Image (cartoon, rainbow, N blue to C red; front, side):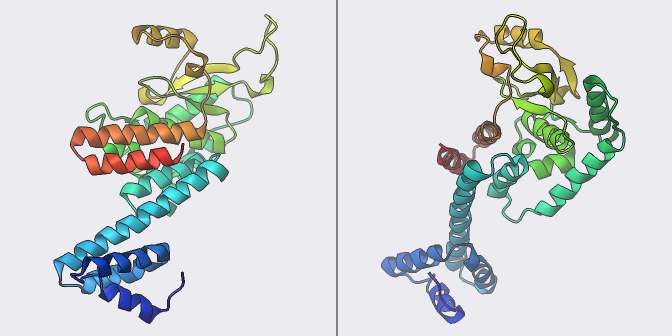
Amino acid sequence: MTLNKSEVQALISLLDDTDTEIFNHVQEKLLNLGKEIIPSLEEAWSQAFDPVKQERIESLIHKIQFDSLIDELKDWAKNNSDDIIAGSLLIARHQYPDLDEERVFTELNQLKRNIWLELNPNLTAFETINVINRVLFDTHMFKGNTTNFHAPANSYIHAVLESKKGNPLLLSIIYTIIAQSLEIPIYGVNLPEHFILCYMDVEHMGVPTQEGSEGSNVLFYINPFSKGAVFGSKEIDAFLKQLNLSPLAIFYEPCSNLEIIKRLMRNLISSYEKLGYPDKSDELRELLESLG
C-alpha cells in the first residue's frame, strides 16, 4: 500500500476516534504501511496532547516494529544465519529498537584489531587462545556477571560490550565473532545449563580416526565465562554426570548459529519471567516460534 503524506496524516488524525470500528480500520491501514510510517507516527506522538492518542500511537509503533522483526528474523534464519552478529542485533532490537548498530561493529572491530596485532602465523592453537584471552579478559576486563547472572542485559550484545559483563552465551558469542573474523576455527557448543566454545582441527575434519570412523575434530574446549579457561572432553563428561544426563554427541560438537540465537531468546524469556515481565516473555516466545 502506498499513500501520500496528506493521506497518512489524515489517517493518523483519526487515531483518537472513539468509534472502535473506525479506529480498527485506521490502525489496520497504518499497520500495512510498515516501518516507513514510523517517523510520521513519532512526529504525531510528539504533537499529541491526548494521552489516549499517545498510547495508541506507542502501541502502533511497537506493533509495526515487532511484525517487522519477525519478518527479519525469518529472513535471517533462511538466508543469513552464517552472520551471528546480525542475529544477535535482531534480538537486541526487540528491546532496543533504536539501537546504534554501527557502534557495536566499531567496538567489535577494535577488539579484533587489538587481538590481530598480537597474533602471528607461528602460534599454536593454545598460544592463539592465550592471546585472545589476554586481550579480552585482562586488557579489556570482560568477565562473567556472577552477581546478577539472570539480568536481561547479560543477553544483549551492545550492553555486554559496554559493561564488559555477560552470561556464558553472550560472552561466547562475542568471543566467536572475533575469532572467526580472524579465521580462527572457534565455534559454539550448546551444553545443557551452560554454553562453551570449541577449537576445531579444521585441517583434519572428516578424516577417519585410527578406529576407522569419523571422530571428533575438537582440539579442546574454551569457557569464556571463566576467562577463557581451556579444558577437554573429560570435564564435559563429569559435568553431564552431575546433571544426570547421557553424554550425547550434540553436547560435544559445534552447534549452528540458529541454535545459538534460539538459546539467546530462551535465556531472555527466563530472565524476563524472573523479573515479572510476562508481556516481554510472551513476545520473545512468539519470536522464537517464528524460527520453527
